[in-house]
Length: 80
View (cartoon, rainbow, N blue to C red):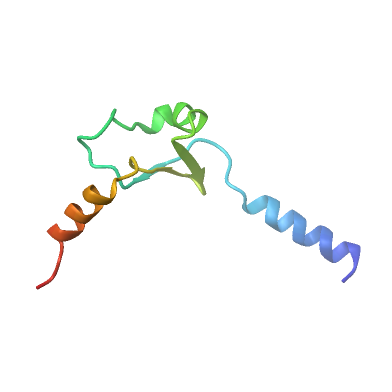
């Protein structure tokens, strides 16, 4: 592979990178838990370590569940 090939690959990869504010929110948090998530506040969520932006999507995960909470939620969706 020549340096020209590597340069073309790098240009292609860099051009595919998303820059700017996210346009969507992806979360596993119930709406009633914690503060409301607004796309406009994305920098605060990322700065606080509560969310990440990937390809224009703000991903915010919910709080960690205890073993009992996890089991209770799982039981609710159990197929008999």
